[in-house]
Length: 259
Picture 1 (cartoon, one colour):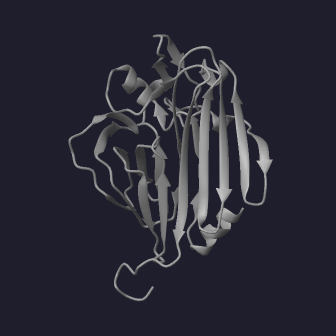
Picture 2 (cartoon, rainbow, N blue to C red):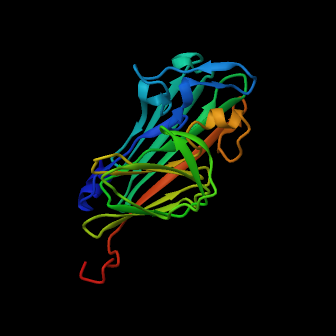
Picture 3 (cartoon, rainbow, N blue to C red):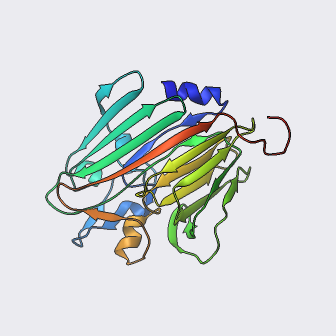
């Protein structure tokens, strides 16, 4: 695809995943629905927590395929993967001369209100990322626990020891810097007010993940924790999000030397 070709021009590997249903983890693969019933979710064998929504388990139909764009649809039936709601997830992936635009919407096709979250999971071989946020969440084993009063870092450097940072109050903008001196700009819309910066131990990549809610948001919201980002949509309603990824062809030298 053209978007991957543009990534090679940047000498920067970029891989994109999308999450429909929820982002990140749900503690112990269970949570309380808005009506008080307990939902038990399917997860990978040997994993205690449900991870990254349902689209990864299922086939997506190709609704449209052109040279520079593709539309994908996932139809989720009630009860699949332990999720009692029926919904549809539609993705639009567009490539252009500057990069790509990723869009997603999730529609509640069931007869009762549905809690939902969504997001994108791009990861890059960037050296560091800059992102302005207001809140850092404390977490235990990739599960968010509560917001902290600690001022979040705005600069996130790839480190050998690795880290994960759950951040909210994000302004929707991030800039990634690569060893070559090139840059990549991320621009997310208003639904994506949270971002996860994840640097796996020993990995050669950095994840900057625009999402609508914090890890384990379903359980935290049910407990009354504010600011989780979880929304509840009624029958026939939907939530939308989009992310623009754009290359900077002529970035200013970061060290004052030649580009």
